[in-house]
Image (cartoon, chains in turn orange, green):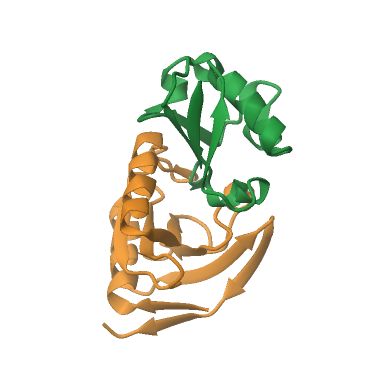
Length: 140
Length: 90
């Protein structure tokens, strides 16, 4: 299960809407060993694509150095799907490389850049196997 | 030429959980060969027939080696190499 504060959910959804129709991506970092997302780190989608995302390689190095210095790990790795459901694509599964992370997907296919209902789901992706998990939103 | 190599979580199964290991070599290609001799199996996760795998990033100090000389990038004593899988998907 993923436990996450409402403000972090809102930040990811706002990022996904802002970048629609391209995919948005980023990380929620948290203390190593805590499994608790705390710090919202939106990333630039270097692919600038509606069907693909990739962190810029220089940004990726800075992100991991920064997390190392803070003794953090990427508790959540999130990205949006802008025309399909919030379920990991074959590409998502192929490139998933953080078995301890919660992979959060947000779909903006219904509302695009507008407010309204959204779809947000969370998964573990380990050795090519996808397991959906519950998301418990904590107010705050 | 001893360098430190930072290993990402997903490859630490090859390094007995170590985050940082040392290796020797005067180019990235030789460093990876040396890593393979110490941590068998790791080279296959980094390389394919065409060279470095597309979704594996390797940095010499602060620079992605794709913007240097790839596998032929010279490595000097006390350099630091960082391996990070791309964060990517569709």
